[in-house]
Image (cartoon, rainbow over all chains, first blue to last red; front, side, top):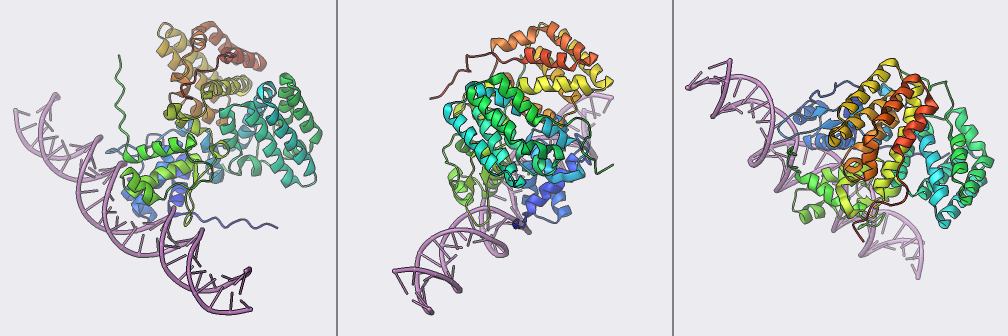
Length: 237
Length: 237
DNA sequence: ACCCGTCAACTGGTTGGACCAGTAGATGTT
DNA sequence: AACATCTACTGGTCCAACCAGTTGACGGGT
């Protein structure tokens, strides 16, 4: 039994969360002006500075556009927000109108994972390959404990993505694994099956070490394949 | 000749830029504490609130970890930053130690574009396919003007990614196209060749409309293929 | 000599209020 | 109706103070 630290959100964090949910859930239409900073401050019962810090973060995410003199307007996040929104969306739970986000993340994970494995087999250096082999071993060691295997699996994929030498893939990997999204919200049986397939993981590592790019790609692809049909269950209207 | 608006950065924006560059360029090692907010404020000659807003944005990007009572520590952005860092990195120019970022973005674009085309052919609805066909036409209309073609091309791909129904792909697409990164910093001759191939674009649209998933995928893949070798030139040590 | 509680000197978090700067709409003139 | 102007907003910045945690040094205990 492990104790999770009690989450202590600062005032501006909470304001951020509220505004994020309001924007993402579509309570404000695109281009609609948000209440003024002073107004939000009184509405939330906090100081204006706290509101400003929250708005800065929303701006950073691409959810709003603030402009001096004019009102702060809501943006259409589908066209302006970056992938980082996915990790912050995990905290929004079923507020958002996208119940398929879990499937989407898995699909992207499969797509990038396969290509990263290919590139890794193509151009990783010996030390990176050694790290991958070691990660596979650590993964095999953890075999009975599912939670531990999950962590080891993630560490292994990180090594592979690092080995691909593609910074964009690495950053995307971070976006996809951060938050409890990919891990917690999709504990599907398929995920368990993937985790248990130690042999396939070993084989993937061997293919990469052998420099077999097409082989590594297809091995990774079949390992990460998203189960067809049976979309993740929706919890809202 | 069009006039770009003169960029007017607020104080906190500038502080953000400086700190971002300092962190990304590795001037601060991972886990190293940043100077205190009060100290930074006097160093930059600005108010503490401006520094705080900048730090909030850095935290949002995954570049630093602030904790009350303790110092604000720099994180290893390779393991904590999300894909959004890519769009902000465009402003960092040659500050960062990764000269291959342009190639990386193109690789990821190809990877996601191909899978999005596949999914789009698989499960897009008629209206989405009509939008794609229309976008192709608009693209063909712009044929002499390279700049206009670039814009139309981006609009077309957006339609395709939207048609894939994958939110994660859409957000990643935003991350990759935002900033002048993918567009400006890689005006390679290859890019021009891709833009001029109107026939291939038309064919891709037809394959999607026909619901030919494998065909659309391979068409997209060959259209987006990143040129081998000849890494983007480096402008720093 | 070592261990451990206490306390002071940091750190970030929050508040209030004041003023600057830019925008947009109402106002009044032509 | 068209236009300049002026006012009442908007966000941007600053100051100054205080709250709330963390850290490490100091000193009394064992």
